[in-house]
Image (cartoon, rainbow, N blue to C red; front, side):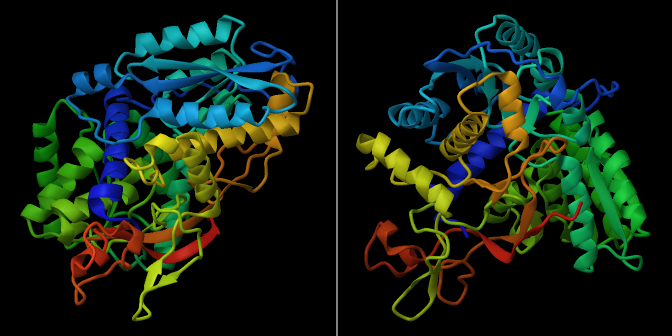
Length: 495
């Protein structure tokens, strides 16, 4: 469940859509270069102490230069939360607590333009050759081959939320560690879940619609189709829609042709592997224009399960509202300070719903302590937003430093990351890594993006927490905007 659209859901969706669009522009062929993996085992790591002193550890925090990137891509970034605030908040808390084994974080917050690969590569080379940096911490913006520049080429630890398929961690091993899910696992799990739900069967026609990037084709050919074949399943149609953000006309034309084919062939289930813009939006828009509303298997591939809520609420409720999909993220929890499981009841006994998970609540409490003058203007932090992401990343860094012990170096740190098991975080349920397992989430829940009607008769989302009532006494004020309705709670990924 999510909170009232103007104050909570809207900014989180804007954040994710803006990042997804920037990455779609910057990585037209994610996964294109399929060279043989050169990653080594943990035993191959040298005990390098670059960036480490007795009292500090130097960490790079890359953040998007929004004025440059959004101007180039025609974007407006409208989230109230900005990356530097989140970094400063949790670095300050880390350092005020004494750091780990006497070492405090020496942060290097570096702005970059994701639309300029040469600039990103130059920064990577500086970080990996200067001898001044211990590790890079990222919340989903340092993407594509630039991850391999740091890890495969530079052999510098990188903890990042941006993910693609397994080839990346194979090549970046053992320096590349993902806070998010391996997209290959996401696709295998999606097929297993769809089959269990009766959405993917031998007797039911379904289609696969993907982007035309090499990475999308890699995902289809090497992961999705083999997972389907293992269950005796074959799509009735596979088609592509351009991922070129500069060519929305072609995207609309291709989407129109695809939808007409799907509609005429009676295909009622679609698996979308499409970037938000222009592919997914074009598909949904043309489906609406042709009164076509198939079952859409949403997932964490290109964040379709996440962005579907914004599409459902704004223009496409018939196509998106009520769809379902698995996600490794805590979608359906509130952006407020009620801990997970603390279900508040209204006077009539109706549940208000669950709030922050305990981990998100702890991040929020730290934010409150570190930013007392901002609480009136910003009375919450987004459950999946930039601030919460930095809290997770820095907590993971802290845990790994504690496991590594007083003799902190590149080898002991990498070894520590490989030993992290069931570490609770805010954005997913836990992080579990291993010597050969470099993507963190191992569980998923099933949610349904739902366009809410704020009346007693039409309300599908839980009532709002009374502390967020802007207009006391207004009956509509007790209802959320749209929400993710929780269908099934945490269970192991089927990979």
